Image 1 (cartoon, rainbow, N blue to C red):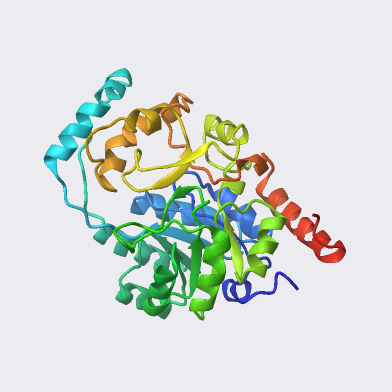
Image 2 (tube, one colour; image 1 turned 180 degrees about the horizontal axis):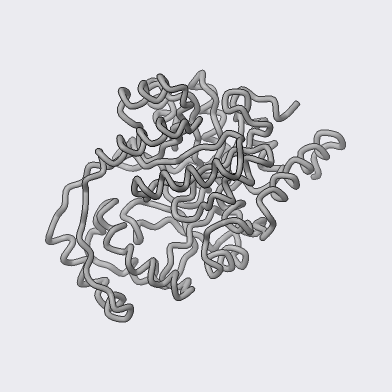
Length: 358
């Protein structure tokens, strides 16, 4: 049985299909419907304050009794360089004037927020927590284990996968370079963060660790799921496939941009957040590509552009939005989340019975 994997057993789900924690674009309905359909829905809570996090967990629990996860960001300790921020503010000023926005106040106090977020997960008895941008402190991992929370990490290289296992993570999401949204990288090699494709990353990571590896990056249908399992993955995590679903919280202009994109539409950029992410090229990315200075690191740049992104979303203006997308947008659909999972399962069952379509 293709679905009877170590990860699906550990997570308590029918199918080893995880909806990615797409921060800012998940809804309780999306999370619940994925879980109700046999997969694992994930609340993208990286940008949530504590009240919002509690409310989202409560809303999901009202819609499903099945397991679900909460995805959180591991803090990055960055120095605030006033001159760098001033230069970026000057560069962004034309957009701010056009949108009637003030310069934002930068807040770098993230460590305490993560600890408080984890306490809410414990309080609300959330069964699964996933993390990206690094590895939580080992004492925090132990605390979650004490309350029977399955803890998932993110890796973009074998070294990061090994570091996740060594820290005590239960499951690793191996994020290939095809993946949409932010890179989960946290270990530089030769001065650069890794950019390894899924077909290379999955088997090497699976051979290097003893805990389950979840494949992520460009997976949109049954072919991608089955290929990932053959390569040694214990399941898959899919973001873009669910981003255009009917329950997704993504703006209509965002969804249309993905549905109208091709395999060459995406680009890696740090223009929006200061951290490398894959998204559809638009005017904002093109404008920042001409910036002569150094773009502030995450989360500073993310806060500097936040108002612009929110205002453009309110206006359904995809020219200034962060249009995160993986490299396989041609396979995106506007189905319901449950229909997406049913279609994937049907494709796998057909391939299992009649052979892979060549």
